[in-house]
Length: 191
Image 1 (cartoon, one colour):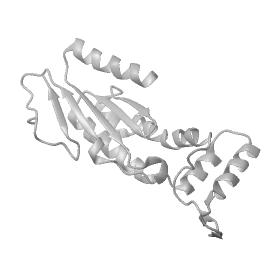
Image 2: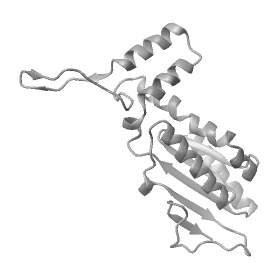
Image 3: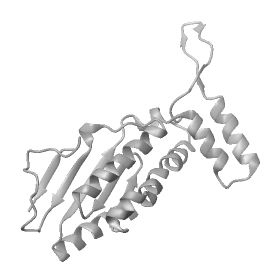
Image 4: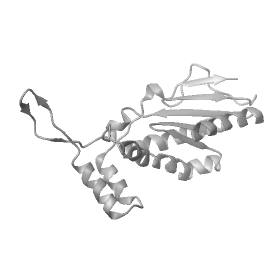
């Protein structure tokens, strides 16, 4: 709900101020299945939780496995090396904790802060990220940060579900035609 309210507030403020506004959305392919287990174990070790809880979580993650049975034949355990175990109640929180650092990366990136001076806004909805920014240059910079940060934990963007929307009020500024693309992101324009 918080992300939806931020989204609405950013859009309305740009509309009321009649300034250029860019919104980009990013989606990761098979996000739950792609998380690197080593990075997940590293995260659990870094959390400010009691050692007993951290050690229990790490032990549980290390023994995540699958056994395939056909008739009476069974395979040996096949240990999971990538992905967050789905169906367990702790999995969503582990996923959110490991992917939340992408927001931190965007907020703390020196190049992003130089361009925006804190005027960017990032929201996460599980594996989807939405970014609001006042310039196209900044959206490109944030796209690079999110792409690189996601790759660090084993995630890759689903290009078909990523895009940029812009509302441009500046008369003298030259903008891309509606059919042109920015980076790898399709672009939609509303004027």
